[in-house]
Length: 77
Image 1 (cartoon, helix red, strand yellow):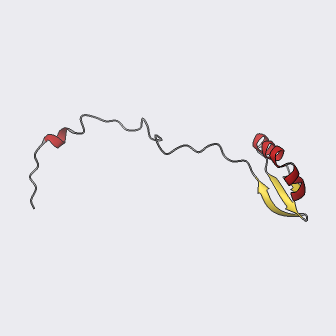
Image 2 (image 1 turned 90 degrees about the vertical axis):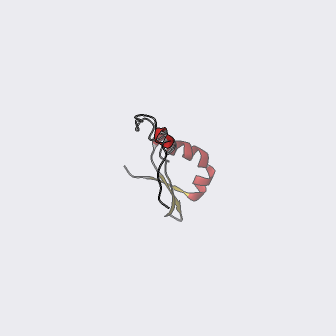
Image 3 (image 1 turned 120 degrees about the vertical axis):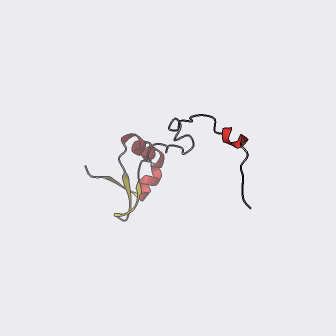
């Protein structure tokens, strides 16, 4: 399937509806000026997954992590 091409003037007049069309159909549109491609309107990928909480549930804590802090350590200076 060939990508849709639209002149810049027509894009300007129908910008919002073209953005909706691209979002729904996931098909890019090439914007031309004097019949030469100058820009491309493409759909964005779905919202990226946040890095925060991404590894939730992948670590298992076995025992009390603070238990060894109660011990006195001999340190040579």
